[in-house]
Length: 303
Length: 263
Image 1 (tube, each protein chain N blue to C red):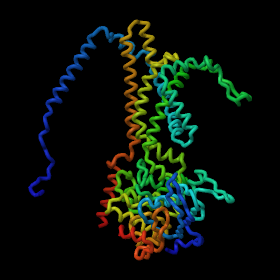
Image 2: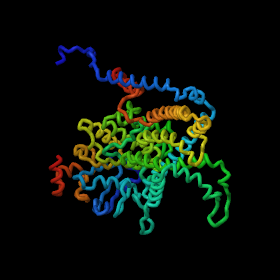
Image 3: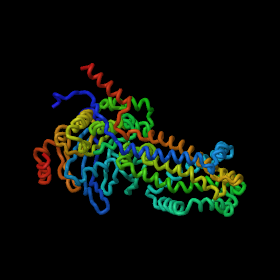
Image 4: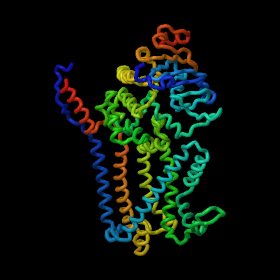
């Protein structure tokens, strides 16, 4: 069969994809028209956009937005893992409490929850640490704490935990039963099995939706005005816009900052996904290839 | 049996099942199992599917809790603590400690896919026994060499064939220096041409004097390596004896019927 066949690489003439080219030209043309229109439309007020893009109030707001995102997600992920594990234990009380938590925090709007946290000090004036009906060891005056930022983080974080719990639970359930059995058979405890065997494998399933949640959280921080906290990007640009009566360029300034932060987050997610995909592919790495080729040439030399 | 296996405790059997029962709800899977496996012995369990072989094996390292009778491994009652005439359920930590010394090899290998072959082998020694990593790696390399996998230590399970994965799984179980090795149909999920390499590794282990309980359909292995052949059906041991005798001259009709189908 291979008698007349040559062993060279095939050099075929590529297929012409005319339709693809036409579509690309039309879409690029429309995009160019839109950009041209926006650039020449004086109502966009690009001068004001440039003036306020790096305004200190906005960049400070960006810092607040990032802090809110990071702290709220830390609470969300930590509490989410705890709730997911609670739902997967055999203990009906823990399962019930986790379910109740999800029911309430997923069942009410985040905006309503944030307003509630803003009113928290009307319900509770101070926090006592001690034995119920017994002595009190310490008292915190909640009303005196720099409460707005604190309650914004709590409000966003507790809401997020309800969503993260389901993401983590799905990840844990995606790891086969054989894995926990193998770990048990080796004498590993339940906690060790979770930490070393189950959760690292669950991460592959958990990370993509969690990346989504982080990006979603970054933008949800604009709702903290409900607490009411007004030091984040959205509310900072809104205040400036209110003073100079220029909402459009300042909204664009805010949008630019959100987009920039999101881009950095997406970059981070890419590396995390790569880190936790170890063992998922059959492709060999360079080191593995070396090990195998090394072994083979060794055999040949020995033979 | 080699001399290696005849320690000072050779009087006490490694596995002793006394009228063991196991129920899953209404399902009565084991109905009074009596079985003794001596030190250094290789016991092969055969029987139709649903006969309870795998369940009995899983009871031996407490992956399943016995619901009646007594099951001793190396003199330890599995799954319970005897206090007077009462049995107390074991704390999970104590049960985990019992399992450390009992190796298990699964039908579907169950290697940890996010770890390389070497990492799979050193995981339990370093995390459970808190062995130093350098020492664990050194011992793991010897074990991987013993099962012919020395050149694949950096490979992830997905990059290995079924036979190679099962050999790594054997090395992983051996890394805990078990006194007893349990094999649950170790070659049933393999392509026919890969069965031999796994059986060879197991044969070598048997020659080194390891006590082994093997659920298998490989009659050739049972005849060649086994010291005892146990035929189970319907949750009871129908017949047990030396493999050559049982295979050549089965006493029970059910054994005869089963063997006529598989031989």
